[in-house]
Image (cartoon, rainbow, N blue to C red; front, side, top):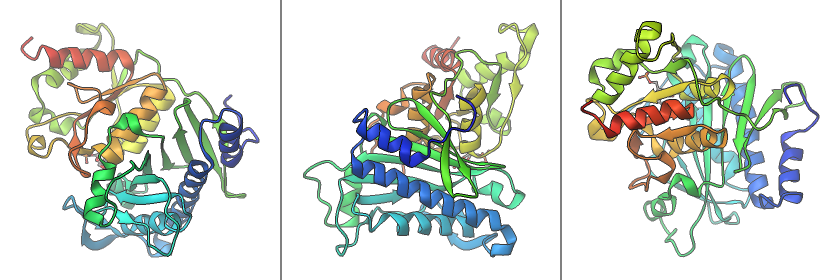
Length: 343
Ligand code: F6P
């Protein structure tokens, strides 16, 4: 199905709950609240300079990165919308050092929500695509949730434990991609009704591709297996691959992953000499895990080069990892190069 249906996100989720019993009511509510927050963020972004929300916030996040006003506003929108519904035990955000507990005046739920409120924020000022990425886990029984610091433990689960994941992309159209473990569905925001409407289901990434995404300016810092892989792509028709490859880099993971879900490709933010100490560039819990699950649900693969991303046991909330994801055969080739780094 590629044209607009009359199936809103609410109806899609109710059918998943009622007919397939794939998701409980609380998870449905959670996803709807996240989607509503994304509409709120889309409206705020859409106002641009007229809304006074452009520019620097004058603060830094836990990663030491300068925050934009929209990073802070998007984070607040998600926190405010999700704290009172009774569906959450805690939230964690790329923008906050510690998890946010649900205030005692509200009922406590059984889910944990993680988000990167505004991904690719260097694109804000140039009016290019940006997004929100989210991941949902179940709060394990018996974990100490008495303090924000103790609550971090509850979040340290592998990506295979996710019960929902997705992103909103704020581009020419605002779209929401979602998985609850039953394939990837894509919804388009109807700006008149404010509803997300199902426009594509069961997204599938072709196993072969002729397009890659990587920040080439980092080339000299990469490890040998990625050097070899990209050199072979650049040799094109005259090289071992026997065909030409095209390159795209939006510099917002949401937009690059979205392109791969729509028309295939491989995305890399590999290990490099500058980020090795930190573990990598992208965040495991807010970026790599939700995107890896979406990609796998669409028939692709996601790896660090040495291990499946979804199998990684996180050691800390803000952990970073190398990321290679997209077309299955390309990711497998990269993994095989990592296994024989001297070739
Ligand atoms: O969150 C980090 C991020 O903005 C990603 O969305 C994106 O893929 C990457 O960084 C871009 O990195 P660079 O600025 O090195 O191209």
